[in-house]
Image 1 (cartoon, rainbow, N blue to C red):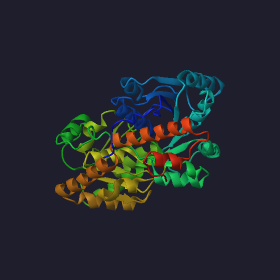
Image 2 (image 1 turned 180 degrees about the vertical axis):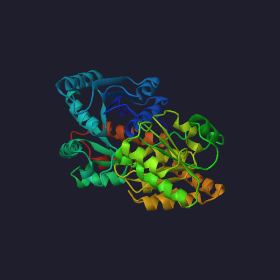
Image 3 (image 1 turned 45 degrees about the vertical axis):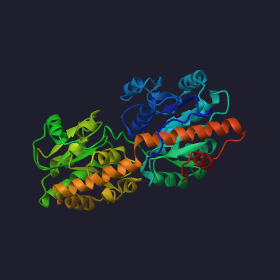
Image 4 (image 1 turned 45 degrees about the horizontal axis):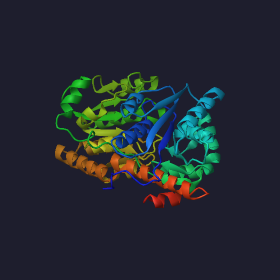
Length: 414
């Protein structure tokens, strides 16, 4: 277990300004909030402030509950225009941060721009939380953003990746590999844990009948998640004699697109699939699932839902996208993306286990989460990294390399 006390030396940054694209529901946003919540109870930690490019979303209230000042540029989407850029610079000049931490591509670029208003050389870190196995599946505007980010990546102190795979993929398109630092996602293990009555709670909340093997997928409604592939795989496993039922939860899932709605209507009997939109009570019912499946075709780096399900003792099946295989380890099954047959076979394999065997697999996932993904341990890694950067900045005229910072913080660089 990594120490959980804050760094108390004089080099600890006074204020860390986080610049995020949004505070809507999403993996990066969730990690930012969890990180600040984990630090909130610690004494003598750096003070945080969060600036969202877009209007405050679902997570803004949780940030306010920690006492973290929250600002917004009030943007709709896209790169900040002149008015938003001026506001970004004014807020940064007012805050005078010791560290600037970007989150997601637009937030990363904004953090670099914000450094112009800091009045001194402030270490800038980016946080990349997306994988790029095939950049051509991304929108043209996204590819242009990647190219601009790659050109500017040499100017930042470090690039934090939550996925080793994503770090390699970004290096392949021009991101400076010497800036790469790996810090995985973390989870509140006191909130996400096995619970004996979670199944009854889940059935009540979603109006589900008792019985069957309940497979859940928690993800927003987006083509990259490839929900239709999972629907087809569930249908094939059911045709092999397994009584599988499917629960799809996430932003937009209560309004499925035409393709997904058609797949559900054609493949699954009425009453075997339940759709629900965005929810903030996932920890309360997630342990009630029999299996967690993630069918993403691309884009995942370190899917939060895998770590959350593992912490809850729920066996996982995931596609081999980003670091999913490393995250799950031997506590679940990994299948190729877009491979319906392989997903169906994995569902049949785990559905064929008895309850004790599935619980044993879930317990292995819980143990892996405790050993590797405790949010308190992950928060310590961020604090050590920031302290190292500030200490180097006050002592040296030239910025320290990412490898030096990682070494100083007792971390391993990619």
